[in-house]
Image (cartoon, rainbow, N blue to C red; front, side):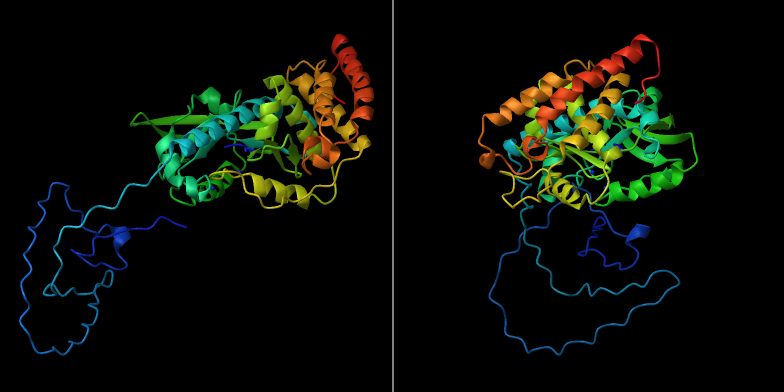
Length: 405
């Protein structure tokens, strides 16, 4: 599961067959009757003119029969039934547009996790207060997305009420143990993994309890219809939540724990290296920044779910811009994180210069209030400081010194 974007889990309704049996309080025991699909449909009766009858006096409702088990209520089988044939309810209408949007959303989220995983795993020394043992994968079910996408998740991704692995972090213990995308979670340390509308939240509680103080956990999954048992080593990593923002703004945000990158920013970056530049900067702000982060948290909450149709027009929460000095501190820590993760840091300054030039082509008054250029106005000071930081890191690397700020 993302440690957190990326990460961003009503109980399922149990249905019996009231026409055959009414069994209150014992559905979980399996008393609901199932009707085979090939059961013949009763013939349709021809309606005839009713014969006038005296109005009957309602009989008293029979009292419940108390047994040692569940309380049951007698059913009056003599009550007239309507045996007319009723059509089955229509299947949910799922548009191809929503299917495509959800698939693209999941692919973009996986893209974030692929980059974030390397940064989080290779920089534990730089985030001592945020370091945690994580499982190294994320799992979703059909209820994991906004409610209007539940049927789309089933049609587009093959998800049902069970949690299914959507992403495995590169370099994690889960990947090394052989966990695969598409595996369905069955049990965790011998305990059944929750399913249904609250599965993610309930599974998180279970996982937190069962991983505390452990180096490895046992995971049972279903793969291609067959059970598979895995021993998954926990992975030490910087524990950040990874979120994808449903916004066309070229933006990225940090609220002290979570990091969000918008779809607009994903469309702007030209490579995974440039995406790493963005994410490392927000990781650094999470580690360095203090004070009230409620506006950033509110904005992340507003953007984190995929919506049907066009993104909502509600006014977004507004974040206060960062001072140039604070951004330079974040650049310094981000550059060390990038160097330790194997990224080319010499293209860091040119990327942010391109962001500044893109923003300069639009009048300031027309820029979205939470776009990157509005929240980080100190480009000039940053572009002057970044080469010095890059030079210091390269000197340490040449002398085989630890890459620590």
